[in-house]
Image (cartoon, rainbow over all chains, first blue to last red):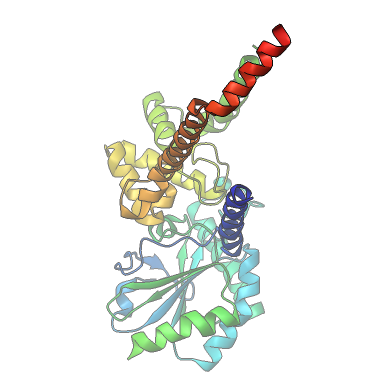
Length: 194
Length: 154
């Protein structure tokens, strides 16, 4: 009788491991950039075509870098949470507009000139923010996704918490929910702001 | 034989698909293309996680293949290109992650399981051999059997 209990026990161990596996999100990968300096870049701003933004401008501040685009469906779910949060908090949120035109499968971006792409990006982003609210202190435009690659972006929306020294302290993949904001992001921000 | 034909069909099919996608814009340098495919076969597409970067049609995979081409053009070695990807996306991006303490179980696990299986098999075989070797009949039983056989023979 005991001999038959051994495979049965093995089976239950397997079930427990598989069960734990089911509760984990395979899309949520640990970022190797955690506790590393935020990669530098210089990109044009959405509001002012003559101004650029780079992470060095934020030295001494705790801030969020939120990667988004208007074609990204999950960003639509996330946006009200960000707008709400920006209303109550002074934490700077910098938007990184990720491949606004090229990432949209409905547009053949290959046919556009760089100027036309930039213009279309501005227009689309502004319309989106005007309609849904603007939680960002500023938005930087990553037209070709090159900066996104440096940050290891693989699915918008993604959000990075960056500390006063310019180190990435957390990467949040997927839309921010009121829960993840409250349980993960805000406690970390509070600690980093001390 | 059937299996081999099927495999051949699959290979040809995928080769066709890969070429159709790859060759279009930048087939200028066949060598670069070959290296790019070789490297991207080692890398996981993070959007569709069970596909390789070379086989994926995801936007990000296209961008990353372009990056690999650019880096090959800059004269980077294969190792430098792999390091570039790992620095951004982590070890998960490699289909063959490096051997280090966090991946010991991953690499050693199958061998551990096999060792356990072999140990169980050996234990089982030994026990059976012992049972076979043990005299099936005691002296007393043997004598009785012999007596019975004698009886029936006579």
